[in-house]
Length: 325
Length: 134
Image 1: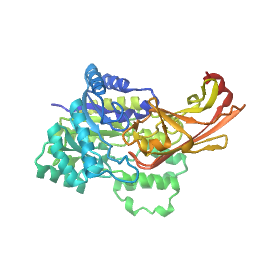
Image 2: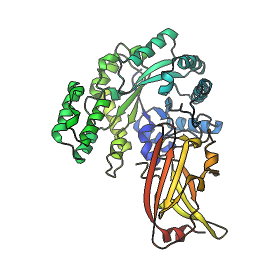
Image 3: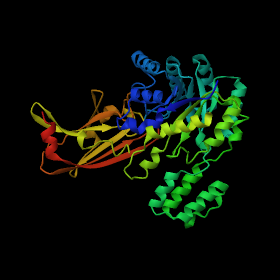
């Protein structure tokens, strides 16, 4: 089976906020792209009130909507796990119950993957306990490999060891392709220039990022916008796509992160032209779910413009389809 | 962006009941991820320099109205991202000219931890009383 395309509705979170897209509008847009899968990001576009305690009616309404447009539920990005109680954390039993409720819900809807909240991924006893629940409900736990993590970081290694130790099919890695940022975010650079950063300093940071020598830059000589750009550079990762090869058996789902696809159809930040051939070579046949995150650079730029989310996702799908041919 | 659109001029109205002015209602959108009502630490409003603390306000979500004290105990009712709630402010004056509104919303937990959002806005007082009264 070939690589399939989907969209994380996180991509449309500002259009949702501005009430330009509701759930039906989002799903219709996905179908118009030719996408066949949807990913939901908890806390932004929930299916009903008080997730995961949804009514039968709310679940049925969502399933009917997906069926109407030929879209399948792929992955649910859980963010829950914080304590709703002021002044204390969740107890082990409360956390376990929250995970079980979420697994049960996703099973009823038909989601295949649960992108774990990080609190769960690194609490080994709870994680191990939850894996047996995942098997029971038939939902696979996914650890998102998001910058500044890389495919060779300790957390990934440790998670793979857990999968091997448990001999489970219900745990997987979810690489966020933002870990292959071969250039810093262009719009952030433009914002820094508008705020008074010097071109030569930004160029020096760009060059140090490309050479992986950011740690030796002299921060003291930088102005505030330049320091902010350097901080951004230090949060980015330029991992080697070839590192996907040995981890291929553990990759069940992928977040196709992007910040900008320009009018010429090129991603200005992430090296998709290097990633897709590797995914094809390893025989990856899961979803690439678009995850647009460029909104932040409009928002924080404070120039009063909204990110063109719908257009950006359309451009990324055109780019991905051209690379997948 | 979400803080800028937390409420706009069109979301502010006088509240009338039985012919009497009861206060100001602000239709307020949650500017961040879904959050339990217990984690809404405070909402404070300043109207033309007059401050209203959290204990003086009430909050309506999905037709249920809560006081600040009650909200602190509601650990299972979530205010969704972008969902509108009505904030009731006991401000019972109608004055000519513009009204300066400064609203601060504070969360003490949730998806991204403690956060605070502030929005300031000037609205035309007479427009509110003329268009929203009943």
